[in-house]
Image 1 (cartoon, rainbow, N blue to C red):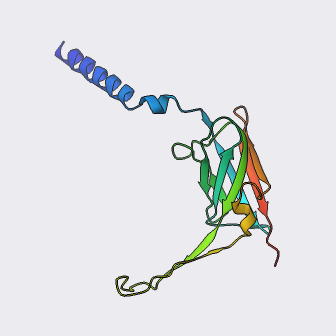
Image 2: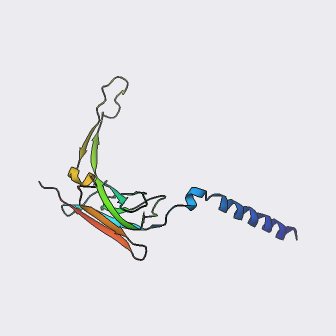
Image 3: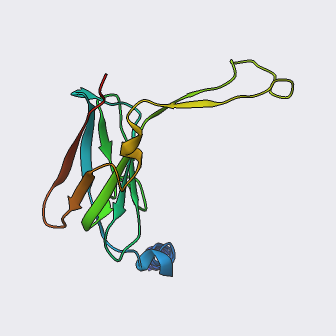
Length: 152
C-alpha cells in the first residue's frame, strides 16, 4: 500500500512538472518542420556560413542555420534542429572572416581594430538581392542546396 501511494505521488509530481514547463508563449508557437541543406561556393562546400530563412507569410519567425566543414546545415527557429515554419522564405547567406588584435594583446592599452571581410559576394546577405528562396512543406522532406558563385 505504502509503495503504491509513493508511486502515485511521484507520478502526480512528474505530470504537474511536465505541464509547467510549457508556458503560454510556447503553446502559441507556429509549428516548425525539419529543414536541412548544403551551401556550396563555386562547387565547394562552404564552412562557417550563416543561413537565414525569412518568411514571406504572415508568420514572422526567422530560422537560422550554420554550415559545418562539409557545408551542411540544419535550421533552427525556436530550439535546436526544429526547422522552419511552413511556407515560402527569402534566404540570406553570410560568411565572414574576422580579424582582431593578436592573442595576448592588452586590450586596455591597444587601439583595437576589428576587421570583417565577407568571403562571399555581399548580395547574398541581402534578402532583396540574393535571389535565394526556399519552400518549407509540412508533408515532405525539406532538403535544400544553395549553389553560390563568386567570380574570380
